[in-house]
Image (cartoon, rainbow, N blue to C red; front, side, top):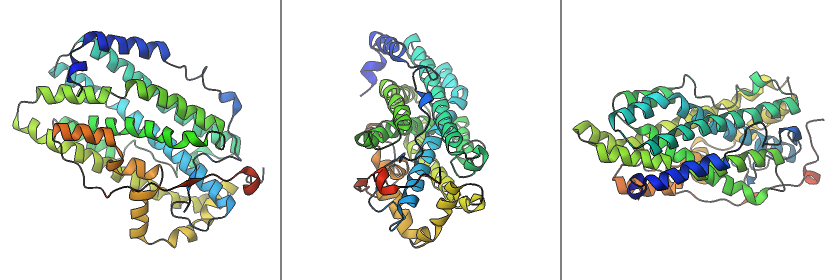
Length: 345
């Protein structure tokens, strides 16, 4: 699928030109001056509020906002991991498998843009904390962090042993980022404008460079020679899926930390009040919801949602983890007049 582009220097050079032309500036082209509308949802909820049926308007608002912050942090952390592994998983590959200068230029732009995206999502979360009066260190106890995680160690070790699970993870992250915006764009008028703008800008650049992971996977496939190369080519995608999903599930469990901070801010108090609702859902039902029907979370966890990456995996004859079939749930967004709550502000 990507072989023709891989050996077309004109097409690659044109992509380099396009990415440079339409690149956006983190500080100048996102309207940070707007701040966060703390009375608005960040992510529309499914009609069952994921695992909180019967939640009040106040609880739904807090859940929506926490989910938005979790999604922001998940993408930011994964894209930061991408830049941290730049040498091990990119430069060393290019040294082993020389490519044309255009593909190297695309790679430089790719890593530069990923770092910018990570900063944008972290900056949004910081702005949310500032505008709602939350201590950033408290929020960080609830949202995903990759540094020092088993996930980061596993991806690094896989690369050191000669595997390329990293590029399968990158391909999935790129696809999820684009699909995530497709899910929230119909609700543009109902969600926080700054949240929408950050995800819109992110989607625009992801759409322009999302093919880079597939180009690298094509380079790797064409150069594989040894038995270990063959083994990794078959298992890397499944390993990447297990590493990523395991990390996301482990990080999601941090939401229970909210009760430790409920005395510090009404936001945490509201989240803590959701725990009895959460416990009404059994572990198996909760796992099913998270992997099968929970909007945004299922998109990240369930590899069967990654249609394009799955198609490439079939072409590479790479194994995939046997996730259950996802089910799309209808979403809802309540109006501000229905919620009538802004954490006492």
